[in-house]
Amino acid sequence: MKIEQIYTGCLAQGAYYITSNNEAVIIDPLREIDPYIQRAKKDKVNIKYIFETHFHADFVSGHVDLAKATGATIVYGPGAQTAFKSHIAKDGEVFEVGDISFKVLHTPGHTMESTCFLLIDEKGKDNAVFTGDTLFIGDVGRPDLAQKAASMTQEQLAGKLYHSLRSKLMTLAGEVTVYPAHGAGSSCGKNMSKETVSTIGDQKKLNYALRADMTEQEFIKEVTDGLLPPPGYFGMNVQMNKSGYENIEKVLARGMNPLSVVAFEAAANDTGAVVLDTRNAQIFSEGFIPNSINIGVDGQFAPWVGAMLPDVAQPLLLITEEGKEGEVLKRLARVGYDHVLGYLQGGFEAWLKEGKEIDTVNRISADKFEGDLTTDTIVIDVRKPGEFEAEHVEGAINIPLDFINEEMASFPKDKPFIIHCAGGYRSMIASSVLKARGIENFKEVAGGFGAISKTAVPKTNFVCTSTKK
Image (tube, rainbow, N blue to C red; front, side):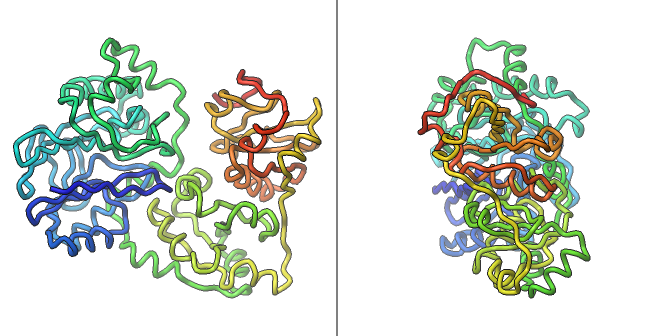
C-alpha cells in the first residue's frame, strides 16, 4: 500500500493517490489529470475509483475527465446528484481496492453530501481517513456554503456537522491518520493549520471544534462566528463539478493565443475583457497597461482571481512573464476561468516598444512610510480582519481586499492615503483595482506590515476602525 498526498500550494488543496496490489484510487483530483495518469502508468496500476468527498466550491475537480480517460468509477456520498455517470454510495458502503478497502462515512454539515473515506489496511485495521472539507487540521469545514442548496441555515448545517464529527470521526482510534482536502490559505475554513496531516488523537486534543465537553450550541456559535462571505466564484465551481465541464486540454489550447499589441488592444476594446497582469507586484508597480488588474501568479493566484473577478464567464486577456503563459492558463482553468481570449505576445515589453500609454503605482518603503507618517495620515490596511485585529498600525482603517469592490466608496477621494497588506501582494492587487476605478491619491507600502513591523511606527492590537468584521 502507498499513500501519496499531492498538495497544490496556490490552492492550499490536497489530492490523494493511493495504490494497493495493482489498483489505485484518486481522491479529490485537480482538473489537470495527466499527473495522475502518469503516476499510474509508472506504478503499473489501474485507477479503479475516483472518490469525491463533496461538490468542491473552490476548484474544478478532474473527476469527469479522469473517469473518461481511465474508465474509473466516480464515487460520491449519499444524496449527491450529478449530470454525469457516477456511483452514489450508501453510508457504510465498502469499496475494495487491491488488498485494502475504503468505508464510506457520510458526514453532512459542510455540505449535505459531504463524505469521508476510511482506509482499512491489509490487516483489516483502520489506517487513515480522508476527510475532505469536514475536518481540517485545527479547524472544520465552514457550514454556510450549502445553505441555499440544502434549504437550511448555516446554524442548522453546523448542527449537522457537530453530530457528524462526533458520531463518525471522533469515535475512530487516536492513531488513525487524518488527511484533509485543504490547509492554511483556503477559504473553505476559518483558521486552518499550515500542517496538512495529523491524527484523530491529536485533533481531539488540539482542534477547538473537537473539544470533548463542547455542547452543540457552543459548537454552532464558535464555528459560525467570524465567517467571511465566500468568494463569488464558489457557486459556479460547484455547478461545474455537478454538471461537468469542457476538457481542460481544449481550454488551454484555446487560451494559448498570442496577440500582437494591435490585436490585444483591439480585443480589449471590442470584448470588454479584463486585462489580467500576472507579473510580480514590484515589476507591475513600475509600469503596466492602464486599467489592468494585477494578481501575481506566484502568490495565492487562483483564489484571488476568484475573489476579484467572481464571474468565471468573464473574458480575460493576459499579461504574463514570457514563458509563463501555460502555467497561468492552467491555474485559471483549475478554478473554472475558461474564457481566456489570448495573451500579449512579447509581454509588457512589447507594449513599451510600441510607445503605448502606461501607468504606475507610487510604491514606498516602510522606512519612507515611517518618515511620512503623521497623526493626520490616513492608513488603509487591506488584510483580513483577524490579521488586522492581531496587530496593526495605530489609527489604521481595515478594508479587507475581499470586500474592495463593495467598499470602493470608503476610500478617500479628496485626501491622500497609504495602503498596505502583510507583504505587498494583496496591496498591489488593491492598488490596481483602485487605479482602474480612477483613484490616484494614494501610495502603497512595499513589504507591507511585515516591513512596517520592523520600524518604530506606533502599533496596536486593539481594533481601531473596521468597515467589516
